[in-house]
Image (cartoon, rainbow, N blue to C red; front, side, top):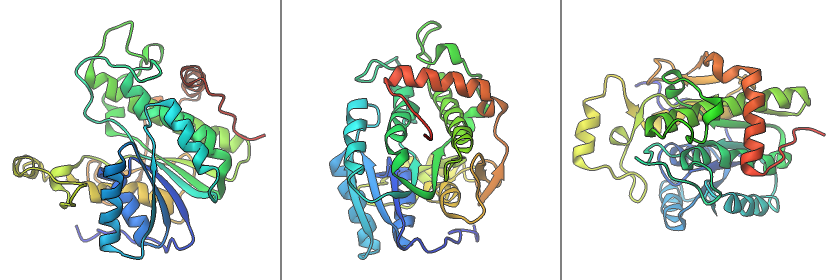
Length: 307
């Protein structure tokens, strides 16, 4: 693990928004950015957990510049209210669309807006958020969306994203939502390029990153002894979330990263950031256009890129 932590340019003067920043990959992403000198807005739905995350960051680096944004990414009303507050702040140099649901419910649940909950949390909320804040990004900004290895392990039912017609399955709900996430991010990059917009959309997946192989951070990551033991048995193919966060950090800050790229750990499930090849489904322009229209309808949002 001599590669960790990966080198990062100074982020002094930069401003970033990280969703789901109170725990897991989002926390370690925000902490590294703040440690490198950036001002970071930590978004999450729990004020208490956001305060714990900021206290942990400041405990390690008292000079860190961080602030909270309480937002429930599964609720469109909360997303719109949160985005409205962001528009009164200086522009951002990047967004890490990290918030998501990994441990999916056993039965089908709906968001406050009537969308299937996993889909609403993992992609539709970010679709609505980015539709509002895209014009508030600085030239050269990067949008990094968290993809997943599950995109290689499931088919994509573009005609049944709400998990209604063919029955609900918790694994498929997660995998479908993460494929949709990647489809959205690559379609966003195509539209940004077509509009000649000075913003890039990149997808990054963290491999197999687990809490039991992650350092203990009070109020942020406190795995039980049993979980640490179980996750230690997977050491050959698993890494901690602090290491998994290096992939989105690289996509966000490293020189030479371009829109439309797909980054992940070098050894698929673990290791330093490396450029990888996404699935054909994720990058299919026809599927991207269909999903965009679906997401606009599901969120009641018109997402216009460019003039």
